[in-house]
Image 1 (cartoon, rainbow, N blue to C red):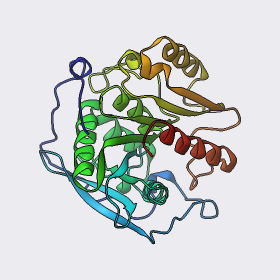
Image 2: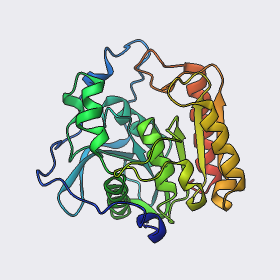
Image 3: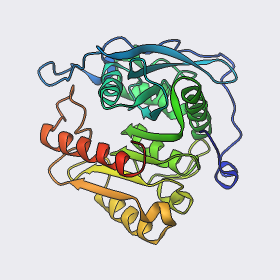
Image 4: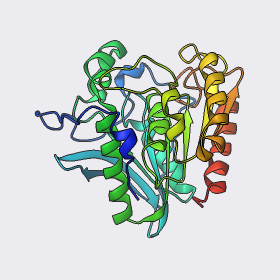
Length: 293
């Protein structure tokens, strides 16, 4: 189920693992403090009845990545979805997303991809969280950890030939990257992930730079009033996809004109119920159309 692409991998810096080991040893309880006050009246709470759900550990060569898993109880050979968090890590919102997907018939796994650099749940300021944790995470490390998560899924109830990925914000960008990395991927869904950006040692390629290497189609969900992702980049991406390989041509980007950034984050003031529900339905239809169900 896992895989890599030699051409893409050659563009990444050598993977240097943190000698301090894993700083985050478990996924968060509750909502991440850095998100501010959760909006209780809109935060969705999905019951775990009928599911196998909870914290797990993913072997990753140099240690174990904490993760959250949810799946229909007693079922095997399930389509698998890797769930990639925002910068806030695998807190209650991401765990709830996994439970929603499990009720839809998926094995959903959210690995804590910041585990070596820090524990996002311990931060109260977004600026410090970015500087001390998020901005220190190499793309190569993330892709390797996702391969390890996919391999774990295959050994724990996941169908070997039905792998998908979705991610939010920071995780939206990672979704595009993984679709250019793993030839065994069926499809992806990127929720307002960064498309452009200046290359760096840890992030050598932007999403726009990797269109020609896409191996699986991606559905993008972007907000027309997102202050952080220019619509100019969305337009560039659409043009690039139309000129790209088969997986790129099969991709699609939906723009929700009145939606801001993080419009699916039901625990934040940015939540837009109508757009979030429409995009969620489109995502489930997308995964079904691409052979995950």
